[in-house]
Amino acid sequence: MGEEDYKVAMGRAVYSALTNSNFHSEARELIAVLEDKPELAKRPDYPSIHDDDYQEKMDVIRQKYASTYKDLDDYSAALGRETSDAAEWDGVKSVGTLTKQLRDNGMSDFADKIESIFDKKEYMKKEGRISISNLVKENIINEGTRSQVGIIDRSGKIASAYVHYDGYPSNMKPGLKKHMKNEKDVLQLIKKGGARGIYNDKDIEYYKSGKPTKGNLKDFGKYVDAADRNGMAEYVYLYNMKDKKWYFADVYGDKKLKKLF
Image (cartoon, rainbow, N blue to C red):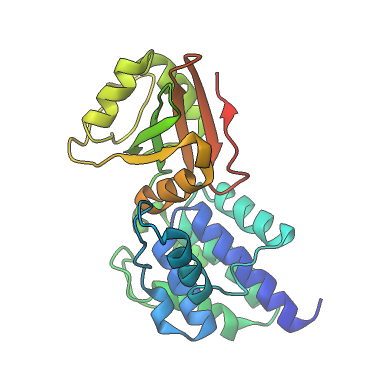
């Protein structure tokens, strides 16, 4: 692999690590810096899924925000994801780990360019370049692993609510078993506007202000896109009223609905 190809691969890995860590604003800023297009740092003004020309508008947005650094190959996607997981989804530490590899390979200028996305972040104690030695958790905003939790009614309509923390299946499975035993429990979550988290050893702390994300099982892909946009959900969890079973889908994975329990 030549130097330029290596830079592209590492840029993609950084993008993968940021999105896996739920640092989506920083991921957009990374693309803006690497493509030298400041306008790409702004979050797209997504259309409503109910718009008649929804697909056309989304196609325009995808074309405008397209980037070679978002076209993840298997290597880059896996490297970024594994780095993020090892850093416990700490976006800054993930980036610092990857840019250290760049510096070790004599590409400090490219590493500086990537790290510049953090220069003016309030959650950094000091402005300036990342120092691997002082990447401590107190410097980082814990954005959690977001999810959408909801219901599929008997006609296939979907409604879900935002849940901020610990949306991984390993946490959500016991949490849903404890607190979401039937459709009434799920509807209460939606009615109360979502929650900070759903844990099997804690009471649910409802938000009381969130709006539901809606869709239809017949066009599940569109619903997943909406869940991603509305709450940057990494996972969706849906209770099916027909068979009274829980299902889930990985928003950044294959996006297919699978039985949870």
